[in-house]
Structure formats: C-alpha cells, structure tokens
Amino acid sequence: MSKVLVIGAGGVGSVAVHKMAMNADIFSHITLASRTKSKCDAIAASVKDRTGVVIDTAALDADDVAATTALIKAVQPALVVNLALPYQDLNIMDACLAAGVNYMDTANYEPRDEAKFEYSWQWAYQDRLRDAGLMALLGSGFDPGVTSVFATWTKKHLLDRIDTLDILDCNGGDTGLPFATNFNPEINLREVTAPSRHWENGQWIEGPALAHKQVFDFDQVGEKNMYLMYHEELESLAKFYPEIKRIRFWMTFGDSYLKHLEVLENVGMTRIDPVRFQGQEIIPIQFLKALLPEPASLGPLTKGKTNIGTIATGVKDGAARTVYVNNVCDHEEAYAETGNQAVSYTTGVPAMIGAALMLTGQWKGEGVFNMEQLDPDPFMDMLNKHGLPWKVRDLDAPLAF
Image (cartoon, rainbow, N blue to C red; front, side, top):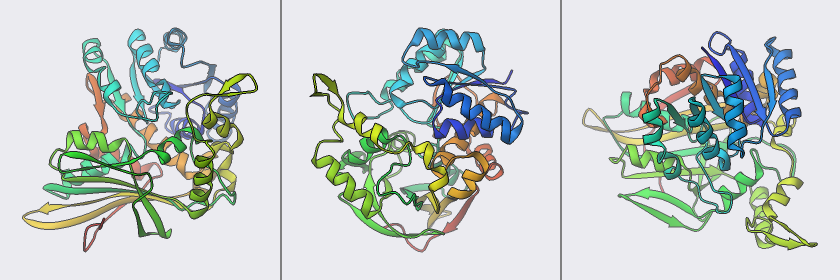
C-alpha cells in the first residue's frame, strides 16, 4: 500500500505533492490536508493540471489530536508526511501513534511560547514508537535533511574521519521586494534572531545573533555575506558523529534584510510574548507575519539561485582532505516545474524522497530516526534523479572562522 497523507499546504507541501504525483508508481494515492481547505484545493488543481493526477483534499486542524487521528483512520495511509508548522509535530506524532501509522517531518518540534527548537521532545517517542512497530523519520528537508545526508555520504565514501563540518546555506534569490521571508515568516524570524550556537570540542559555544560574518564565493551565485547561526541539524550531527570536533551552520543575508530585521527587533515586532492592544492580546511576530508577503506567493517574483552544501575536513587513507558537497537550485526552474520558488523546492523534494524511501522499504526501522542513521546512497541517487543534482569537489583549505 502506498497511500500517503500530507499535512500542510504551504510552499513545501505544494512542492512535495507535485513531486509525489510525478512518481505515481510509488505514491498510488495522495491526500493533502490543511486548516484552510481552499489552499489544498488550489494545489490539487495545479497538480492535476501539471501531472494529470487527482489528489484528495481535507480540512484539518492539526492541533486537534482526535481530529487528526480520525482523518488518518479514514484515509488509511501507509505514511503521514507532516509539512505543517513545527509547533504541531508532537500532536501529529500522537495521532500517528493512536492510528498506528508511520510518521515523517522536515523540521523538529518547537514550542509556541519559546524560540527554542531541539530534538529531545521527539526523541522521547523512541520507546513508544518502537513498541508499536512504527517508524518516525525526522528532518527530511534540505537543512535539516540533505545536509545531514551529505555528511553521512561524505563519511561513507570520501573521508575515514570527519574533523570539522560546516553547513553553508545561500539563497541568492531576489524578489524585488524590500523585505520578505522565503519560508514561514514567524519561523524564519525566530530562527534568525536567536543566539548563534555551534558545536566545538564536545560542547556548545553560544554567541550573539548574527555576530560572526564571513564572505564566501558561492558557485553560480557569487560572493555573499554569511552569518554563523544555530540550526537543528547541528544537534543530531553532534549526537551521531561524536568524532567531529567542530560543527557550524552559516546562512547568507542581504544588507536590506538585516536592516529591516534590526528595525523590527528594535520596535518589538519580533516578540513572541503576548501584548495588549485595543482590549485584546496579540503576539507581535504573528501580527507581523500577517503583514508580510505569503512565501508561497513569491514564486513568480523570485529570480536567482540557491546554493546549499557541506564542507568537511578530515583524513582519507592517512592524508588530510577537505571536500565540498553542494546543490545549486534555480528559482525560476523550480517555479516552472511546480509553481513554487527554490526554497520551497529544496525542502519539498527531499520530503518526497524521504517518504518514497520509507514507502518502498529502502529505509525502515522501528522507533525514531534522524537522517544520519540511514543509508545515504539511495537518497543521494534520488536527489540526482528528481531535480536536486549535487556536485563534489576538493578544496585546498578548510573554511576559516
């Protein structure tokens, strides 16, 4: 059985179901559910127009465990693919347990009232899922997701030992707008404004947000300023690769984005605690989200490319080696294929691939799994076949601080 229930009708959900429909030999039946059914219906119409495949749609409040459980039981999928908000991960996992169905997501759990994302809450499901004979795959997006697979594949094929690992995320796209986020504004801004954090010599090193900057020349994009940040795959990489002495994550930001962000922070618009306004409570960052462009609407506006990859230093056959594995994705090509820009595309395609590997049994197990625990080879092969080809090259020197 290869029925799948996808929850979440944003840009990533749209890309994932388009790519699933393009692989009907694996995904025999697709149901897309979201709080706003009209969004699902619009995606379904696009999928039918582009692929000829008809998918089902449903209205769902994923915060409601009973309603989610009921929908899972009604659809009877082999897998639930959670592409909703990270606040909803645990509720959807609870529903999967109640319905006896495997689970997959692209981003780890984050509580609504605290800008903190970590795997501990989801790793705590290990025994319950194992005892139920179910599998949960965490973080099958690009970062987290593909970047972890790049690291695992590097360790399997290119290095006997990894000493340092840097993840570089560059979005060279331009929307022509003064300020817009390329994925969910609330999640994006919470990530960017959090303190930086990286793994070094067995401990976490914290610092101010966006305090460390480097210039890097990205293939097909050019030189960009990139900033040290914390990102969730650092936690799983540190857990599953204790040999690595230092793991860092870098993301590029333009000067206009940072200027707007600084002003919004200074006036309190990125706050996540409620404030009183005209007799009612509002959360500033959620109000700001309502004012900003919907990321899914940016597809026809976005030009340029993304470039995301990993630089690993280590030893191969007794000699020092530095290797760079990366993917370049074109915003306009992604939009032409799926109606979504490359940031959604680079997350939605790996979501489809992770789901496909679970449905075909190439990735299987009982309990909670991160990407680093599974064989990278079939995933890397599917990246090349389904729109995210990657390249490998040796570098003369590791990335400096």
